[in-house]
Each structure stands twice: as C-alpha cells, then as structure tokens.
Length: 258
Image (tube, rainbow, N blue to C red; front, side):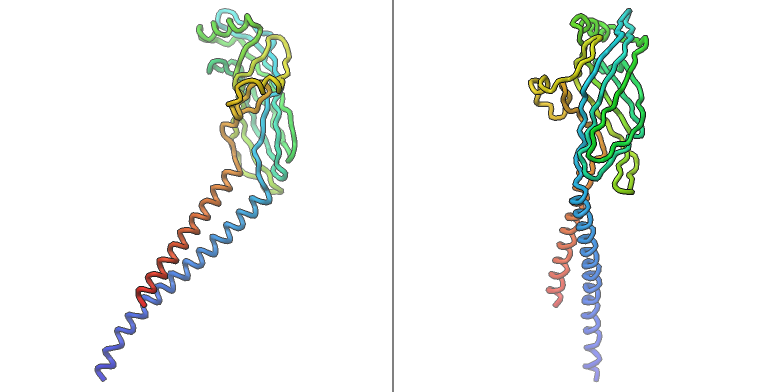
C-alpha cells in the first residue's frame, strides 16, 4: 500500500511538463498560422497593386526680367514639371506644393502652386512661376551669377516639396512629404527653353535620377509603397523563422523529457 502511494507524486511531476509544452506548442502554432495568413494577405495585396515609382521630369523653363544690381536680384522664373504616375490602381492627391529655385545653395525664388489630383496611369504637367523681388545676395554669389549672365545662361537647382496622399479605391492614406530636386538646370535669359532629351543623353549619365537637360528629377523622400510592403514581408518571414526555431526547440525539449 505505501509503495503504490509513493508512485503518485512522480506521475504528477511527469504530467506537469507535458501540459506546459502542450500549451506552448498551441500558442506557437496559433502564432505561426496568424503570421502565415498576414504574410499571404500582404503578398496578395502587393501583387494586386504592383506599386511603381513616380517619374518627374523638368520639361521647359525660362527666366525673364533678369536684373542684378548692387547684389540685389530681380527675376521671374517659369518652369513646367512633368509628373508621370505609371501605377494601374494608385492615384495621388497633391494637397500642398512649394517650389524653390536655388543658386549655389542660396534660395533666390519661391512660390506655392495650386493643389491637384492625379489619377492612375496619368501624365500631368504643372506650371510654376517664381519671382525674385529685390533679393539681397552675398557678394561672392552675386559675382558668380554676374559672370554666368555674360554667357546669357545661368545654372540653377529647382526644388519641389509637396504633401501627398495616396488613393486606392475608396481608401486614402495619411499625408506624406514628397521632395523632388532637379539639379543643374541650365536656362537662357529672356528665352523660353525646351529641355531636349538628346542633350541629357550626352551628359553626366552617372546621375541615375539626377536632372540634367530633360532628365529625371531626383526623389529625395517619398512615400514608397514598394519599400513599405517589402519591409513588411521581411518582418513576416523573419517572424516565421523565429516561430519555426521555437517549434524545433520545443520538440527537442519534449524528446529529452520523454
């Protein structure tokens, strides 16, 4: 009789680890199933949307009423920005747009533009007029600009900053900041110039997105759906690997216990 009572605690001790491992395995299985479902949903969404980058090109530009006297600048800049949305399903709201012209890192003209909506698979052209009114310039910058003026051409950088929202069906994203910069834009004084693609093809091809004549403008920062989805997929598959490693560890511990 005492011998039979002595075996009861040992049996209870054996059942406790098994119950604990069963609970952990159940939680790991549920977590694995959830990760797989979320991963499939993200993958299917990415395949359906197939997001692509927008392409921005500065097509035309001119400067008029150019006058540089006593280190003070007066000028009117006109540009046409071509915005190409190649996406089949994603549309874009441009809610607030700022345009800036800089010369040797000094802002010489600034203006805002009207907001607009760009549907999917669309090409829109945005006109901007920027005015420099009695703008004070540093002596060194003014001297360099005066030297360029003698050749009847000046080289500036054109910047765009806008607040955008993405639209997919009825869904709309929150605001994101989009920055575009067009480097080394050469424009002729008092003459409207079309930036010809052939000129770009022969100059500075090492700038992949940098704007040289009729080139693509560089996206400094944007809401990139492709990168966001890819990062989600990386996290999902990373969690999947962790759960599989946990499951293997549980099985090894269970085999040792048995």
